Image 1: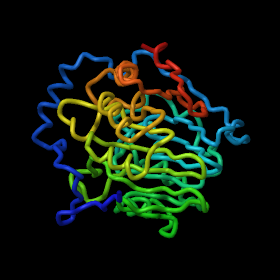
Image 2: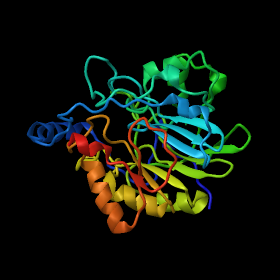
Image 3: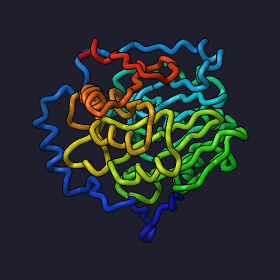
Length: 330
């Protein structure tokens, strides 16, 4: 089974299936919901501080696979001798300004200048909680290949990344990293845009990362759609799926899965181990900050899914393991 490229209508990319995105007509009910919301969206207790032991990176992972969760969808992935950073956001806020907007619950557990040498950086789409201008500018003088969805390269180039280091990919297209690691863009059900104009004029993607020994899936942002089974058929099974579980709500059920559909996606992808992303870092939806992971552990038990939930900033080799780090802050 092959993956077909994204379709467009005029300038705008289309989702794999009809999708109800968040529109201007929903702003008033969303605001009302937020006003009446009594959930603990922001932790009452200060989270952390989490600190990465960067000396760990001096020794390769014994299994060949090791993950450091920086928070939200930012991951340092070590896979079969390659190091790949996903959707790096180091700023305090996921916003167009440092003055307001969703603020991090905890500081990044390692500084940008403490990162080990990288082989590639993946940018799934252009939303502020996945594409951070100040973080990208840090890499402007580095010779690190970027792999991003179609159209996202314009932002990278504007912020100082040289064009020859930018690899824009459509769904189904691949980039070879270091001779034995293949990164392939695959469909997701989401949307794009960084302001009032230009909505859906850049693509959004998930990614298959296939190393010499391991095969893993980075889901980025997506609502549920049957394409997960198609991706599993074409590229699975996966040693590890990394899937979003947070930022869900009644007004955007088509573009964010939540823990129930994320666990279904893991099964459809033929995943062996599931790591939850996109939770516990920013207040982006009207649920308690800890609700996604609490619900996921129940669904995983019911559906016989093995979870991998390391604490923020701790380089960890994937195995069935739930750290329960969040419980001390509930």
